[in-house]
Length: 338
Ligand code: NAD
Ligand code: TYD
Image 1 (tube, rainbow, N blue to C red):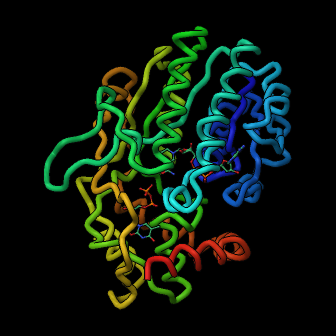
Image 2 (image 1 turned 45 degrees about the vertical axis):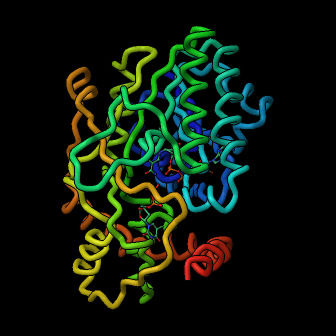
Image 3 (image 1 turned 180 degrees about the horizontal axis):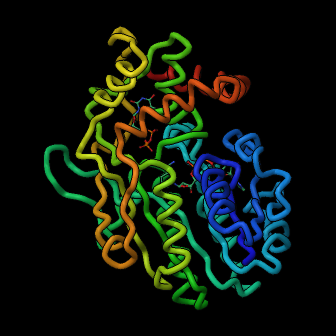
């Protein structure tokens, strides 16, 4: 099988490629990635010479590049996106361009080249925000209610993917997954930002009251879910994917990280809140469990500890990532929240 992975140099895409080549060494993978600030080929060093793996630097918004990469492809796994909510507040346009318009360019090329399956990797954030202190969860029937430019641009992409199935008969599947954590996550996101700041002796910025809740999933469990949906998912269907945690808020996570690193709560710094901050996410993943037999295999506490170990043993990876453009971004973002 020839698999086109978009955004394969990012956090989840690179974990997915490493996972896939271990599971299915006979398959060919083409990684199509623009290498934005979030794309990093170092993530894929261990397989860069593998003859089953090819890298193409390209932009999903460029129809010519996309059409040429799509030739002879059986299956597309579409990860490429602008993925950080705070950046989407600073600069919404690139989110609409890449996440919404870029997905449409890919869909056109997939129809034209008659791919056998187009899998779209999406987020639970399209469903909006849940209240604290109740047990409600998102599921596949939840109405879309995106509240950030990031989630709105992903919602637009989900609608386009379904429209291409209904209108052009493109064989699609979608996963809407909760917050991932694990190796190679860019340190603009909460968990790697907290770990690497503490390792550098810096404080961790906590937005608002810190009582915001996310549903956390270890990245390999997400890769397994996408694998199952690609192999056995019903064409045209959407599957919600989420983790094992009971509600755990940001402050509690940061306290866990501090305690695992032997540091006290002086490292916590409350800052202004993110505008439009979604209060709580929680995902009901019973459909993918009942229909495809998926469930998370990694519990939060154990794999948070392993993730911290990974960042402790990959200091040169994140030090490089945190230099250059990152410094500019960090200053702009966190000066705004003082
Ligand atoms: P990431 O920001 O780490 O990586 C995104 C990758 O896409 C980068 O390699 C980047 O270079 C590439 N890219 C960006 N714009 C591109 C373009 N125009 N053309 C080609 N490549 C481009 O993101 P991630 O956290 O790995 O997320 C991957 C996907 O999973 C996204 O679609 C995201 O919406 C979705 N998702 C992420 C999470 C999460 O917790 N991180 C949860 C659910 C769903
Ligand atoms: P993030 O990792 O940006 O993911 P998302 O907003 O897509 O869920 O943020 C996770 C939670 O952590 C969210 O409630 C915002 C909060 N947060 C902070 O409190 N401080 C930070 O510096 C960051 C990056 C996030």
